Amino acid sequence: MDYIFENTDRVRDYECDLQGIVNNANYQHYLEHSRHLFITRRGVTFAQLHDEGIDVVVARFEIAYKTPLRPDDQYTCRLRVEKQGIRYVFFQDIYRTADNTLCVKAKVDCVATVGGRLTASTPRLDAILNQ
Image (cartoon, rainbow, N blue to C red; front, side):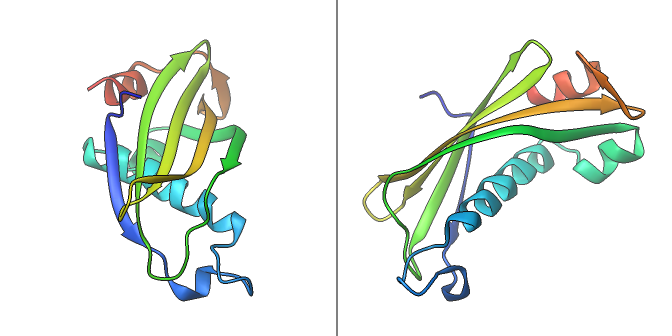
């Protein structure tokens, strides 16, 4: 896959369950954090977009768990994004950094509202994502 962004982080022990693996809900946090970093590295924050009247919200989330992460594992989130109709589709994968093992595959469909109304396109957001 042709990724356009990646960030690396480490599993904290409190993110794991009694089985000693990352709780499934925490992967969504990892993926969301990666999307936020992606936007921030392009020179804008979601808070700034909100102040401009543009809100990006998750409409659908698909996730496939492949291999669990464990406490202190370093992981890398990679992503790419496509515009599909009114959706901004983020294809995101999480890899254990030590051996590049795929841990999670996700597809996150987002939509944008401007002034609270669903919109098919926002030139501002399109320009940010296509840098």
